[in-house]
Length: 405
Image (cartoon, rainbow, N blue to C red; front, top):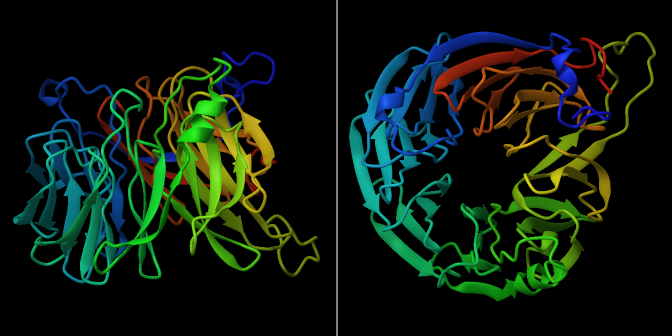
């Protein structure tokens, strides 16, 4: 991220001290992992009870104490657990998927199995709850609606995977106003009725844009849309943001699927995050000191190991800024304390300014991070690729160190 030498991140010599490690515990045993180099299961935080739930490449889901990372229980599956758990506070149940093809529901108090729903292919995206229904997708382009209490199927849909034309990974579902939005490996994006799974608009085919973008040979010809749709609003109208791996980033109208805008330069995106900051007086001045008020800002961040981290204007899709990540992949950025926390597989964990992508601070345990941080307040939790569970706190960049941007 150094503007002079992109191979040497700036923070190697200019750490600001904005990140403080408060929990560090070796969690997974290397001998129990099987051919998986990365830890991708984003943690889920139960703040009321001081618990963190996180999956692991050692085939387990862990319940940990947020204060020190000590285990409360561990649930074993037959495959690696790379999905983000979903905590249901009403039932005190945790839902999570495994590469063994199942969606599990376990009691949060003791890890006892409530039900297991077999989907037939890896489940690595988070389930989504709407009322009494869970929506979950698997790696075979299947979407299921199941009862959250019993695990019984209510309906399902399936598209034929575009075999040989997709990269690793797939999208998860988004639910909004009675519709379930889903993207697939053949480049289609669709909307379904949440009650019965019927199509609510004609599937939008983004594969043509992927083929056109790769025609010059500068990018691999992958058709899939691997980003879980993100909900937004443009001029009072609701939209979803999605990204075709080779076709770029798109905004689609939620009612019809019509394209609102597209950006064909932001290729290779695997995660999208919509970030908003309300108008405010910076804490360095305080409301009683007459400081200038910062305007409201919003950015759509697109993470790509191919083209870097993009900040796009969510209303137009135009680039605000872009930075290259030196070597390897990156996670989705997690908003925290007015900044962004982002993991990289080669250079550790970065704290960035959302205004310009400048590095504020970073830490490196030597094994990199493929797991998006889970954030609550100024605390964040994640696991390194070496199996070390971390809890960190972040001081607002407006009050600490240079490069606050």
